Image 1 (tube, rainbow, N blue to C red):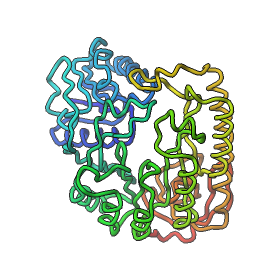
Image 2: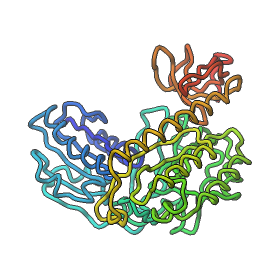
Image 3: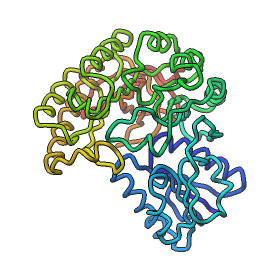
Image 4: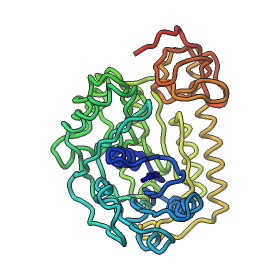
Length: 419
């Protein structure tokens, strides 16, 4: 049978999809991660915003346009949140949630709705096959933060961690097959809390892995000298810290139930830069949260410029039913749109400034694809780099010759592959 396993969500969803693809292929099915003609579609959905959930529903129609006779199976966060929105759609035969996703290959002949209770301990048995230069390794699931705007703790459950030995075993296997591993999870900052460990303990266990290691999104609370000492000892660490912010004004942060102040945040940024002076600090920003006044927003713009982010992902606030913030009311959509545009303008200027700071410096680049007539890849700091000629899937030392529109145009120092 020809099966398409399509991801509509985050890197954790991607990791789970990759594992399912491998299992189905081992059982003799013809599989694809792309949305192409297939006999069966498995949709791993997202619910982080209303828009993400809407796109998850729309994907059912996209599948039917490719094959009107196909069967459709739905899983993931959107179906965990509301399975009924999918089961009533044409050709959707089975709907599950997040629990038991690793066993979905055994449930392809089931029908109806079966949304299991979310687990309280880490029990996934995923083992995806690497088909790219970069691999993802899931170390944790769930979240205990309960930010007032976020639905994820309700659809992913409480934080639970994978064993250190299991993570190390997968990374040791992957180092032979890829050039970079991204450590991912729903909240990797909480790693180890339920198994008597912490993220620094895991980093020490991974310090000799023979490929680049990149961390997923981090919370301010996890940044301390112990973690930074561990990362400093990791021989292939990629110094990019995606440090979630969401707002640069303390009153809004409190209403968001974010457990830090802007002063705390800035102190952690300074600590990171003491260890890794040229690192990229990237972030997420929500514009138009219900309690965000114009003054609050202006303070946010001032704060992000004070930090000087290498990259900022800007989102307009999206109310999610069932969350605390959904009761706060809403700001006019036109105001939210204007704030998003203003934040994006500043974010773009900061990104360009950060990339320009590397002109004349040496970077290590992992070449992955072609783009605009160049070979394209990313540095350890996650700077997009263009070079004239290179081999995809290999690492090169390059010198940045110029920077335009946030892209580094580079010259390979020599054509010998670096490690």
